[in-house]
Image (tube, rainbow, N blue to C red; front, side):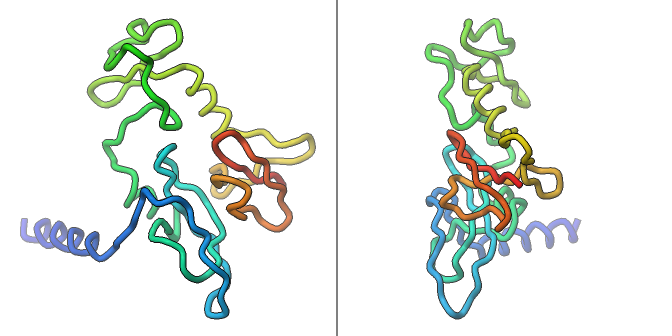
Length: 175
């Protein structure tokens, strides 16, 4: 019991030491002689997604993480439940238990206790954005089997040998 209390207290104190701003838009920072550009991740509050960008080394804001894991840990609440890509629920609906309650343009996205009537069009867009396609002869760049996404090609997140392809919500790298 004592160990649990110590761990809980330590994690609370550590969390207070980190002052992140998960709602700030991506800021690449500025180039400086003290630091080389390095890959970082920011939380896109609209789509509730951690995305890559090339941090220039100095300045910037507090929406900057060393990994997607840290970005998700500090910015994406475990119990956060929303429609894909931050889209609104189907007009005139609220919660649901079954897709039949969501009309012809919606489906029931189930959470742990209740569902939301989300728009089918956004589910389909979400699938395309998170599973992008590259032009013939090229492959989607992945890290540890996960698609490597940025908010836009201006994020400069792609490796040197890759081509950046801008989607409606995200940018992907093709190699």
